[in-house]
Amino acid sequence: MLIRILDLVNLSPSEMVRRDANFAELGVDPDSLDDPTAVVDLLLAYPILMQRPIGVLGENAIVARPAERILDLLNV
Image (cartoon, rainbow, N blue to C red; front, side, top):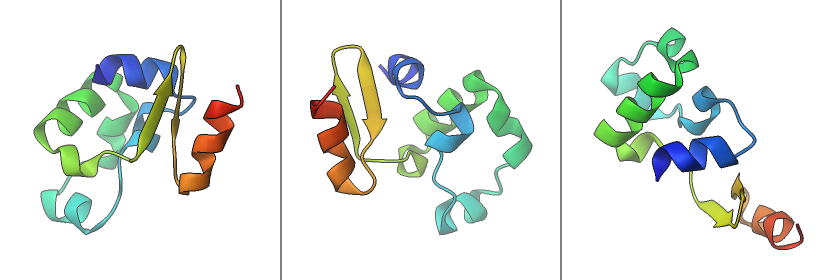
């Protein structure tokens, strides 16, 4: 499902990763985030790093930050 979301959302794989205190604590190499496989592996291992909430409707997906962005998805 995560791979499908990465395909649907109009962001680069690295933009799906939250760069917060958890990111810094894990010592993730930011250069590795250009590889979609590395991003999937990272998010499966540390789901707390995934940008969220994510809205999926049919063949479209968005990161709903701010939450009002979900309206963009519903108006597709």
